[in-house]
Amino acid sequence: MANQLGLSWHRPGKRLGRRSIRACLLAGLGLITSRAAYAHHPFGGQTPANSIEGFLSGLGHPVIGIDHLAFVIAIGLMAAILRPGLWVPVAFLTTALLGTGIHLQRWDLLAPEFFISTSILIFGGLLAFRQSPNLWLTTGLAAIAGIFHGYAYGEAIVGAEMTPLVSYLVGFSMIQLAITALAYVCGRALNARSIDGSVLPTRFAGFAIAGMGLAFLSSVLLG
Image 1: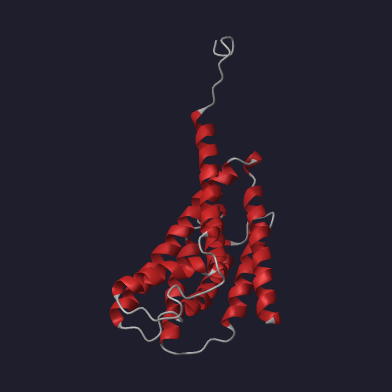
Image 2 (image 1 turned 180 degrees about the horizontal axis):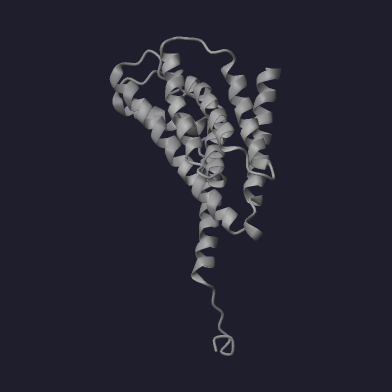
C-alpha cells in the first residue's frame, strides 16, 4: 500500500545502523583532529600542581598523544571482534597503571617509544587478519603493551604531589575507558552492517592503524 501511494519506508534497525555509523565516523574524526599532535604533555611539560590540573592532564595525555590514541582505539575494536573481548581492554588498562607506577618509581624501561610504536603496528596487523586472533594471546600482548604506554603516561606526572597524582591516574583511566567503549560500539555497529557477519570494516581500520604504527616506528628508528 505504501509503495502504491509513492511512499517509502525503512526499517528502524536500518535507520539506527546508519545513524550509528555516522556517529562513529564523526566521533573518530573528532578524536583524531582534536589538537592531535604527536606530543605527551598537556601542560607543556609542566608538572600538574593540583587535582584539577592532574585530572585534566590525565584526560589529555592519551588523546593528544596520537600513538596512545591509535592503540586505545585498536583495543576497543579488538574487543568488538573477540569473545569475550572485554579481557583485552581490562588487561591493557590495568597494566597501564602498573607502567605509570614503574615510571614514578624512577625505574627505567628499555626503549619505551619503540615498544609503543611496535604495539600499534602489531594490533593493527591483528585487526587486519581475516581470522580473529587468539583471545589469550591478544590479551597477553595488550597487557605487555599497557606497561609501556603507562610508562610513557608517567612522564607527565613525575614529581607531582599525591593529590594531583591520584587525579591524573583517574583522568587517564577514565578517558581510555571512554575511548575504548566508543571504539567498541563503533566496531560492533560497523561489523553489523557488513555482509554475512564478516569483520571487513574492522579489517580496514586495522590496516590504517598498522600504517600509523609503521610510521611511528619508522620515526623512532630513523630519529
